[in-house]
Image 1: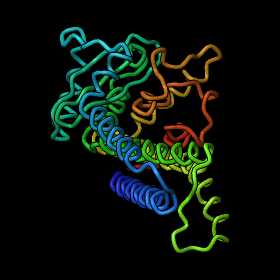
Image 2: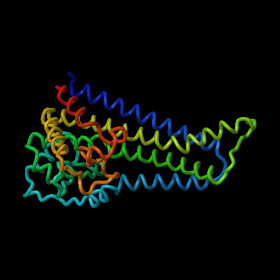
Image 3: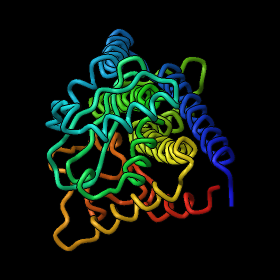
Image 4: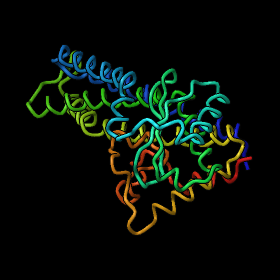
Length: 301
């Protein structure tokens, strides 16, 4: 058994450690590329600036695109009075601005939060509202509001930006190797050229994969953290666990389909993996296994 606070501290620490490792890896890749690779610094600088601008755009305006792509429509406060009441109550308890509430017409039970903490949005599917009782719905909403309160959109935007720049460096190295670019050896002897080439190949081929795995690991830890914070917020981990069990049962149906308008970009935002379990290997999943999330919640007090 573990308390809400133990789980929150545990997952927060692991998230920060992963971000720190990602930062060191990012700095190391940039340093090696600069040290070993000759030519094209201006083009590389332009690429980095473009990625940073893209990250800023995603953080400040991406929520509108996500809602549009997901076909989310603003919820009518009268028609969805219970939903609004729960969202406002949980937001008040967390001392954040209540998010705008949206509805996605999809039979799959799911939800996601997006936007900045100062201008948040929360979307739920019609399937979630039809499937969950009040306690379960409150658990899911608590999880999503926790994402907003913990600035998870910012955390994942930073991780995605790091991964994009590492991918840019890798592509630059690969292309230059392909076109026969030469590497600076400086004061090194010619017999070091093989090692330099090996490092360059590692940057070009392995760095993007390693960056992806770290980014996905961060995403999974933030999901565990949101579960723990959501359970603390509602003081009812059983409600959230029950919601996950219902989603697990729904996903296991023979004809179950993923969220209709979800894609690889919006997938990390959802409460549970919006794709069917066979479509993505667990190692490359943005979400922890539902079974593990349920076990952790059932041990909380």
